[in-house]
Amino acid sequence: MNILETPSIQETISRIFMNETENVAQLEGLERFFEVETQLMHEIHNLEKDRAKETLRELIDMLALHAGKDIIRTVRNYYIILSSVMARKLYEMRVPPKKAFAFNAACVELVDKHMNDSEFMYVADELIEFFTSIISERKQPSFGHQTVNKVVIFINDEVERDLSVEEIAKHFNISTSHLSRIFREHAGITLVEYLNVRRVEESQYYLRHSNKGISEISKQFHFCNQSYFTRIFKKYTSVTPKQFRDSQHIPYFRYTLPNAK
Image 1 (tube, one colour):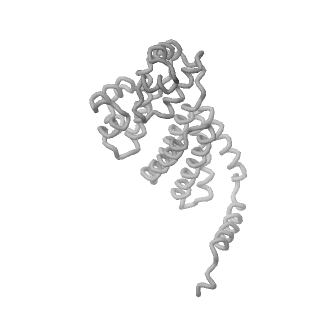
Image 2 (cartoon, one colour; image 1 turned 30 degrees about the vertical axis):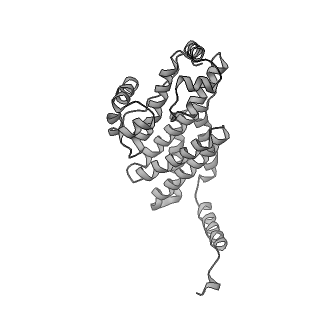
């Protein structure tokens, strides 16, 4: 075949589309796929984590009917597509673009690292954990002071920066003493404690899904040294960073602010 006879990309895609349309038409139950996927998005948005895990498993079962022996590749591709859809939804929820992009990259890295015959269902659960965690950061706090609500969102968005009480106070054009007082009064913990809590929560993903050393992760989240990072991490999770990294069965630590409504 000479170059003039080579089918165009558009022709190739059209042929594949027609073939796949015929194949899918012979399968039962796929008409519900997008309905179930819509249900999954609703559950993630409402932080219904356990239900979302079950719904994603239902979607995987539907994909398996079509994939045949190629189920790993099919599910892997769907995980990546789902992560991209979630990144777009985060952006629509006014998550900073750099964080939405990083979220998508982190999901792809998770899929690449763990996607095999024995762990692809584990990846599904981990993605739901990650999705609901990021969504929860964007839920508007309902404390009785609007500045405190804005501070919580600001910290969630900028958790990897070397934030201090002084810098946050300057950003909101109030004194450090006033900020510290109203935050503790309305949130139920000190601002410094909340900074540490959020850093511990975020560091869990790097411990479990990156090859970075514990010391490097400690520096990334601006703990003064690895020993201090270990002490703070264990204070909230009851395990050391190494123990968390080495055991996939240790659940993620999630903190609920004492006075959150």
